[in-house]
Image (tube, rainbow, N blue to C red; front, side):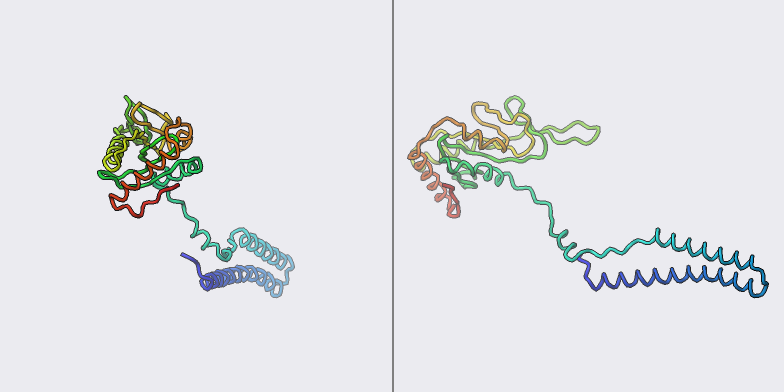
Length: 264
């Protein structure tokens, strides 16, 4: 919550009044010691007693000054806008894996790749469809909590372990391969064109292997997907890519995906 200027002035005034009252009380005690020395001099007439009272009072005053100087905490008034600026600084929320993949591959558009994101097919919804010189790719984006490792050609998720316990292993079941088959069949049903479609699973989590191709699917970390796509062998010329894009549009319109944006 912001500290309003009127509140800060009130707090500062109360602080200063309390400090003045304490100092006056301490100085009064010191002056009282000096006064006692003077009274002793007046009534007793002994200069030694007066001198002792003067020394005691001076020492008491010095001790008060040292104590107040060391113990006093200076009042800090926040600079204008300080609290507001601190409040406006927020930790950015992590992007959804689908948005991360879309951003990672958008640089390929200038080299002839076209992308469709979040498209509803006849039987399912596809995270990403890429059409370009390297062919047709259906991608699924995942960001599971843990470390993804490949065992027996399948991705296994290793969940973080509590101290003194073994990590929990979970078999992931990506749908990219099934999506690629469904997309191929959907396009063929609508247009009569048969396509070769590559299935890709994009991980936005720790994936030590980086990139693994098992002949049917490709498992890859999101930071490497654009480079991998750029290095794929040539499969489609621009005319063929246009025909595939038209088939994708037909598929999208079949499912009433009128808000779909195709990057060209």
